Amino acid sequence: MRGKAADRPASVSSPRSFTRRRNGLWSRRSACSRPAVARDVARYAGAVSGAGESITIRLATAADAVAIAEIYNREVMQSTATFDLVPRTIEQQQEWLAARSGAFAAIVAVDETRRVVGFASLSPYKERAAYRTTVEDSVYVHQDVTGRGIGKALLGRLVEVARESGFHSMIGRIEASGDASRALHASCGFELVGIERDVGRKFNRWLSVAVMQLML
Image (cartoon, rainbow, N blue to C red; front, side, top):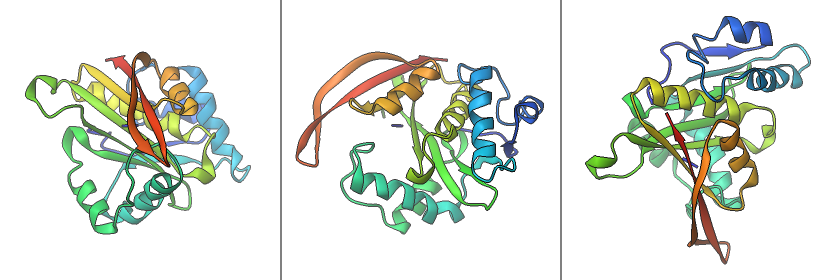
């Protein structure tokens, strides 16, 4: 899968605090900021310790390079979530972060121990100038904490970031058998607009790509 994020971090610890902090994590009502999403994030908030542990969404910094590389490289080696075949070095991850600024900033999800448990970013959809109003999203969650609403929180924030930055269209390109990722995007209002068939090859098999789009 593939921003200017909020100026201040946003924490979610309960449905009540979620509503109170909408100007942080959910500054505008997007397809991902419905009550169901608030409940998903709140369930995660209490699921780890049973004491209302919160997840914070903030801008990624250079200090996050090691944690981001760990999450990403695990997907490179074990899944088809990315079509990369070679893990990133820390230097390459630092370069990737250095290139993420302004409208194309990266964001991270951090738990109460300050551990990065997921990251996401917006990237240019295509290089040619006529595509500049369309953006592509990336969302990755640490495999140890999947299914707890973190991906939805990250993607929801990216939708807001894209709107705040003035983009017109948002694209998710997902390996076609990635049902969880496709469901995540659908829950945030993305619609399937096409399948690119057998465009990649990894783990000795052909891979297709589902293209999902959200009009902002």
